[in-house]
Length: 324
Image (cartoon, rainbow, N blue to C red):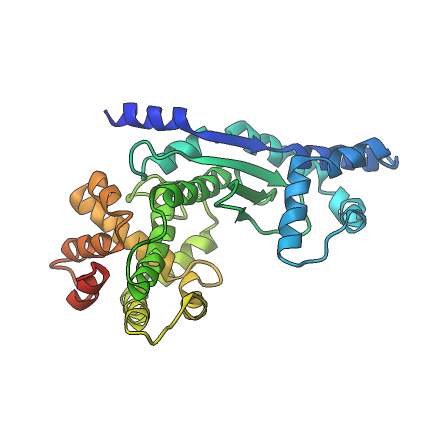
């Protein structure tokens, strides 16, 4: 039955892997490595590519300087051109994996029939970051083509981001609630970062950084050791919203900054541990049922933590998040 549900959801997806910008950049590298100046047709191909035009819109939206001339300097820099063999190999490996497995992992942790509609761009670009752009308009996942990242890491990252797209579709922002309650519930849904970690790994028995370097696994384990204190900090944050000490979304974003962290803060670690424990105790269907209701997820975690020396959410917070 689960296989049929997943197959139906996958069939309803609208996913595209877009590599035109990276392919155009690599064609320019090949010309440069042969000692020739890349012809204007190759540059036109790059600047007209779907990936390049999206990157241009993103940088302009962030009010960062961005021009064809500056990008041309970046691509023709000797250090960039020298990466052509590694970038070519990495693109072929990532493209060979495609999006079917990442989509399957994401769907395994989403309500049945949740559509995932997104374009996934693989880009060669100056900034080494990956991000989601225009999530409510035309969802785009932008992945920096990094030769240091394996095909397994590509699948993990793609699954994580695809889960975010599906989670947003399945769990819209709170409406029709008192403002303080709506704001608190919407921020509690940031535990979706932990759910995405669980989905990307493939289950609660797989380390969330199984595909990552040992240093990333060690950092995660150190951060996870702060689970009790991090849970307490998030509870105080949510109560500050409910009590009016945090007055609006702007103040809440500033106060919640540490929970995203420079790498992966409490939204990730606490969210993952709660979700993993709920799945192990009650099954995946129960976890998915609670995904869109933060009060239900936190309450189920408390039940899963019974008899264990772990921090739990206060009954007062759970009642207030439930609107009682």
